[in-house]
Image 1 (tube, helix red, strand yellow):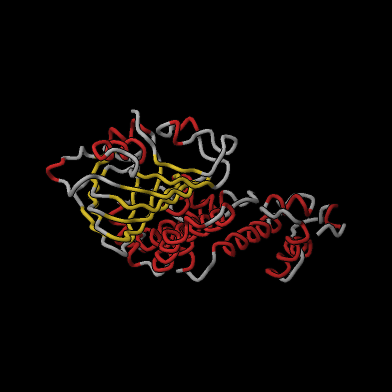
Image 2 (cartoon, one colour):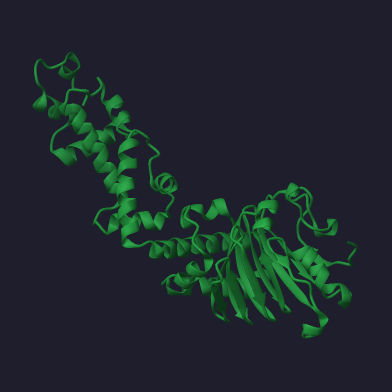
Length: 364
């Protein structure tokens, strides 16, 4: 398509190989190497071509409906400011009415795997899920969009701001369970963290255009971290107590099987179980124990069990390593704090038969 463009951007080819004067973005260009900005508008496009131009340049993760002049409120117009990072984008935009859909065929063919959290500034948004559930969002409401779920969207004339991230960035917040975004959005409205994210996104919408590159990078990072925290809290709220009980039992089994891994922690456990970090934290806190303390206690108990059975290795460093501790001195201190004895004293107390030669040296 040949369109006259009304765009401006602030990067050079060494930062990002793609630029709007090359036409529609394609995945082969990858992401920028630094935080950049792009403004996009239909102002310089002929009215008859404005809607097709916007569909071509701005819509990637859904298929916009054809615009019927008889049903519209006049010539189509839209503009947007994008703050684009190496791992996501924030868009602030205003647009005439638009509607479209995301189908299973689109999901299979375009391989777009992103997740969006946004705020309606004016107008209304109507989102219908694959099972017919519909959620309407008015000014001040947060909204969600999952490019891996079939849906239909209808906007009237509106202003909005949204953050779009690759799924791997939000995976630890959402877990692997595919929760319908209509259900997630309802829980999002109840989150005590949502007002903070709402305020942050309003600030981005008002002041984003005035930020330099360093300011964009700082604000982008803060917005992402806040959004991920909100999504974690929301998915934790959706998990029922029975779900959390199951996650707690499964987590204990996973921990017992991976105690020797010094990197064992919430990210790996949540990923293996397919739940969010917040859900996992809550599953343990409901039993008045932190996940980190549970792992430490399990490691110390494993060490004590090996010593009690006479099955411990011959050096303190090897025993510490086998139980997931990276520092032998730290292991010794934690063991004494927990059991009131050093590892060697504990072993000798429970030893049956002659004391091995290695125990006669104060290795522990």
